[in-house]
Amino acid sequence: MKTVITYGTFDLFHVGHVRLLKRARALGTRLCVGISTDEFNARKCKKAVHSFAERAEIVSSSQFVDHVFAEEGWEQKRGDIIRYSASVFVMGDDWLGEFDFLSDICQVVYLPRTEKISTTGIRENILEGR
Ligand code: C2G
Image (cartoon, rainbow, N blue to C red; front, side, top):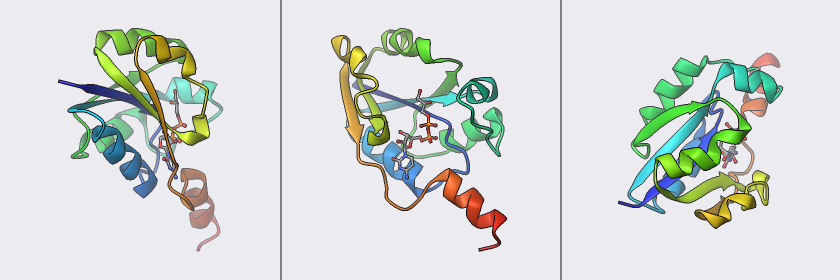
């Protein structure tokens, strides 16, 4: 089994998230996803529309996701990679370079973000009635 691991808020689940998860899953045989808790989001200065429980339920419903768990802080990734025996760590390339420090214990892969879609953009469109 080749485990891939990734993390995110995954609020207002959209095709950019789907394509990230799909490509991440294709790099192994199991994908584990850390979902940012509401408390951690507050520390990321993010306020999600959907609660942690709802975001975890939505992401775990994806055909590309095998397991979801709570991401409660920045410092848990190394322990998670060891706990899940992950050999690949994946993030979108808006994080390029930010997690290279993990490359001593797993392959670190940054995937191109999906253009023209973001949770922030969706919220702005709704607020502006578009
Ligand atoms: N993403 C993407 N294309 C988009 C939007 C997002 O590929 N158009 C990717 C991001 O690069 C990230 C994942 O989808 O890898 C989840 O995005 P967010 O929910 O915005 O996650 P973020 O707030 O960046 O939290 O410790 C890491 C953090 O938890 C990441």
